[in-house]
Image (cartoon, rainbow, N blue to C red; front, side):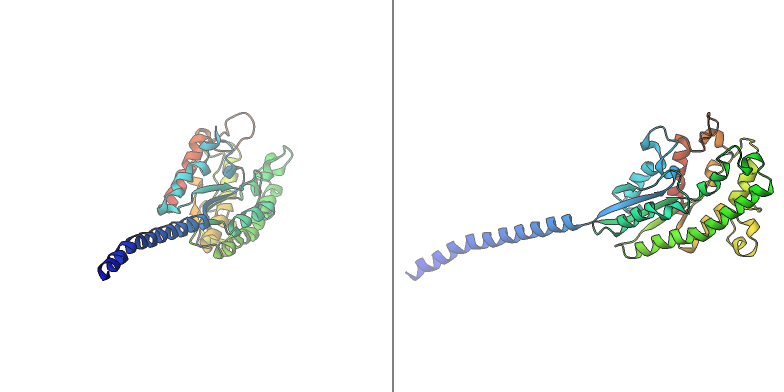
Length: 286
């Protein structure tokens, strides 16, 4: 009788062990599924103006933001699996602080997202508005006092607002999980190499009288500081990555932009967008 009871005990033990193992496996699977469901979506956030929107590209996927999507999705370059583009054509350093910034902050603050990369193209329109109408002083005579005064006023506004833009993003990202990379674009000269009467004045507006990015100049000699100085040096102050687009187009604007097409189209063509994307990757590796 004792032998029968002992045998029965061993026989009942096997199903019990199997049931416990099965339950443990189910619980592990449920926990893994729950963790996967709770993991926030990693995001590549694009901000800025028509360049970031993709104007000039023959198809949307040939603009620089989509071209960078696969690169930034790689774990070594951010691991951002979803692109969110909140850029708006025509934005300036003033207007971007409105609804576009609110949209960007909503994405960053969303508990279901984890922003890994931000790319920002803003500032070019602050100067381009000086070339909007045939009667604008900079259209009539780029060397005139009225034009130069307009450029100085525009640059002063950029100098005031760019740190606000980058500081607002930095504060929001500080509360976002994980680490992030912020890429800030300088501006190219859409007249580079064209021989246009605007080519040299635009170079000075972008780079200052020394035709070079020089952060010391901003403090010691403002005349030597142009738009790209203000952008690059503000970005450097926040520890952001500067993507210097000026040499990307250089003196090849006719080949890399639509400036030679009918109308006033300063946007890059497909080749230009591809080079802007390449400049991001190079800046990320430097």
